[in-house]
Length: 353
Ligand SMILES: NC(=O)c1ccc[n+]([C@@H]2O[C@H](COP(=O)([O-])OP(=O)(O)OC[C@H]3O[C@@H](n4cnc5c(N)ncnc54)[C@H](O)[C@@H]3O)[C@@H](O)[C@H]2O)c1
Ligand SMILES: O=C(O)CCC(=O)CC(=O)O
Image (tube, rainbow, N blue to C red):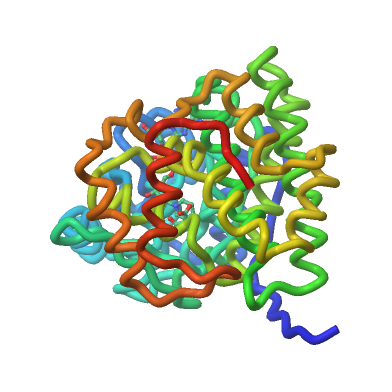
């Protein structure tokens, strides 16, 4: 064995009802007195309930989070945090709200508490993202890692089934790439395999019974594990494809991950036999890319980039952007290779290893 592993300093509270019953305790534990709550417009009712539970610890509610964190949205949020005299930030919502909280933390150094309502996994990572001039930039900085994460399966009950499925596959994608990342390690591999197993078992149950708190809890547990994997490792081809498709072409995040993952995995499979072995065990299959494609299709997720609104003419531009960046991937990414993955995902073909 040959690896290094750095544990991320954060506290996790996981229990139904915790968003309202435990967030104030986490704020006090960090010695904070005036936190700014951030959320998206659609999640503002939930964020308001959390704000009410904080009482005078809450310095204000800012409900302008948007997907992929446009830089002007980040600028405005930083201004609001400064004007409110906030000494910390609580992000309530999906990856977009947490992303905005991270943008505030990155610029101001304010500590962040995350209360996730989707399975994006962002709450477990020191990864930030910002979109400017039609391109998404990502980076790692310890200052954006939430100090505390409050997981409340009850918050996820309102997620519609289509978002639950695609958000769940977004989480699975973190585990998939962590398994073949250059900085993977035995602990990450264990978390990744268990995260994929938990999430992919929970999603069909959620689709059949969206109000099952038991299934929601197991999916959120999977999201925690998969997010932890992303936080501990370097992203590869799959995430880069999705960042280009989201940042440059405005495609929706979780849906894009869901469409692309089977093809990116099929491309990498010949160069990542151990990762494929772990995924085969987790999915109880001998063809992990096909199993992922079948699962999301059965649960009604979009199947192709064409369905998500990408134009065929954009494929070559996207391939050029992906192949033009240097990043870790188990298999060399050529322009032709990236284009082949994108073409298959555009058409929604059966993935071929
Ligand atoms: N930095 C990281 O580590 C990381 C990891 C994953 C995703 N992300 C980022 O997160 C963003 C995507 O996050 P997302 O997929 O969670 O989407 P999102 O946060 O944009 O949420 C999608 C939609 O669902 C709504 N929603 C959220 N929770 C809900 C709930 N419980 N019930 C009903 N509706 C709900 C939101 O209001 C929004 O309209 C992207 O910008 C992506 O880049 C970052
Ligand atoms: O915060 C970001 O936007 C970058 C990290 C990320 O998006 C992970 C993912 O693609 O799911």
